Length: 73
Length: 262
Length: 74
Image 1 (cartoon, chains in turn purple, brown, red):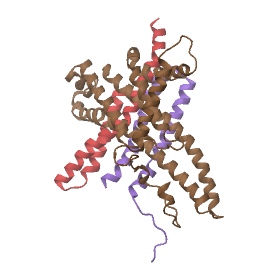
Image 2: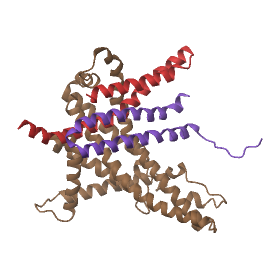
Image 3: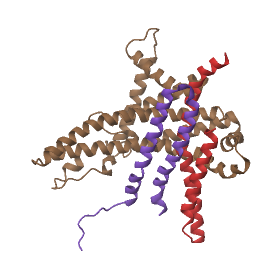
């Protein structure tokens, strides 16, 4: 069976490219909604900031694991 | 561009790393290449600009002093004051120089005929980042004591005791090793990628419109020219942003070692 | 009076705290991954069992998240 199409090169970089899709959307959602919440109720800025940071660190962890994964396997 | 036109092959070859191998300008003096010349030129531009703006300041600013004051106030209010607070005025010289130097370095990437972002040779950001790093450690040890600096950094108050053993290495690695590395590499990677993107789209446009003009290939060339214009605009924004971020992180590191983290 | 001065001082120091936290988040996660993932990798080279490397990476990520939570989340 002959090969019709082929993707050569570093699969790890393709993997990382796919891995940035989810965290990109996640970070956008977190900070977008956080900004809206601050605009609606500016006096709760401290509370919103804490929660934004917490959400951001969880999402960013996934992005950085995606960065490191090609080196593990 | 020379690397592409000499080929005159039938297939388009995308520009690669040979974009960054530049020969010496004066044959025989091997270290004097185009990036070195552009770096010297940027230093002269920054010095000339700051000299003409701030040497004889008048009470009502006119002309170049006006522009210089805009730049000074931007750096002071957005970069220095949030992180350095009251000491901001002492560090303005360093932060202003860093910001303008990195911005002029980056701008060399889009000036016609010069077109080489100096920060895409990693030595240049490394030198700046290492200088800020050495300054950070020196200031931290001077203001918080030699061992106190590391103690305050590695053992932030308010955590349960057994966790310290696991977390102190993370804090140390993050502050001492990852921070200067990302400081330099952030600038380098952005400029490197931007240069390759601009060269790629320009090469595609030139190839499909001038070198091998075909009816099917001409629209590709037109799209590539439009993309070149769009990416140049985006690249100019990124250049400003990266210069601003470089100065901001320098101010953050200096501020972090002046006042201990509470 | 204290409330008013706190209101004036709050945006500036909040901005600084938030910027410190935001820039330190990827830095802590990356160093946790490198440190504990590297330790796990060395451990798996020493014992021959290859599973310690991903375990080390996960442990590093969890510790870094916990560090950010304790330091900036309260």
